[in-house]
Length: 131
Image 1 (cartoon, rainbow, N blue to C red):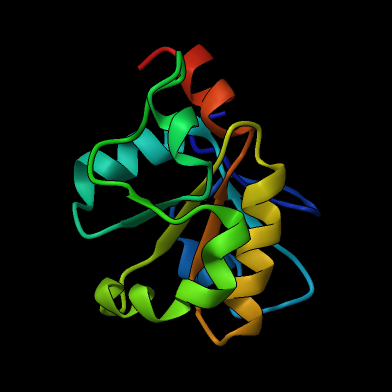
Image 2 (image 1 turned 45 degrees about the vertical axis):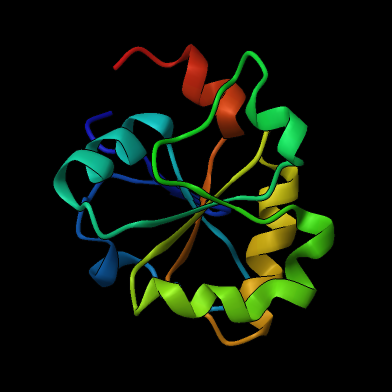
């Protein structure tokens, strides 16, 4: 599959996300595969990557994405104001396996943040995907 943009309904084979998925739809989450995120990081330096893992996890074997902002999931609700730095950029939420990212993405959607994406499989999948 050339492009791996996925939703709960399945994978969409079109890189033009705006035409295929409404990221403002709070009833579903929009997922990016590690390969798609790698492509977007190279082509769109304005992405806002939010890592919701605990700080000690960032130094572990999975590492961290360059430029990612770390706000642990348990602090996210209190620190939502810090996301004003994103200035309209797409938000990509990452964690170890994707579960905390899903929770964080829903919190962001509920607080009015649009264009929120989840790294499918989290940093575990990122590390296992050749780039």
